[in-house]
Length: 167
Image (cartoon, rainbow, N blue to C red; front, side, top):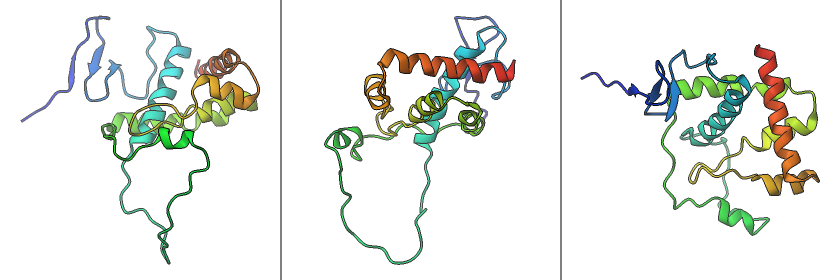
């Protein structure tokens, strides 16, 4: 039985919705669309890469040798709310999403500005159960010592810098 996970999208003619990844695709999974601004696509790819990285299922990956059974130490109370093993995990990523993630994870290295690089890297940390960012904009701004709108502007500028590398 052949399963086609693409259905026509009502928004743009010629584009398709990949139901398994819930993203618009009409080109190869690693190409930018010419119909939309590259900076917006870079931001979307970064967001998708964060979720893909969080939902990769790795099994039996443990260091060899002696193991101890001490409980995990929680350094901050807010960490208790962020990660709960009792929640349902997000679905596994598609092969296309993993291919895009492999490309995207090299992008922060293209950024010379350390503020932009820090914002992009911290926004790549996503909870695999809730899909929530560990670093929301306001806490990220406080951590960097800037206003959250400045942190958002740095992220947008980083997407522009990355986008120019491909133009």
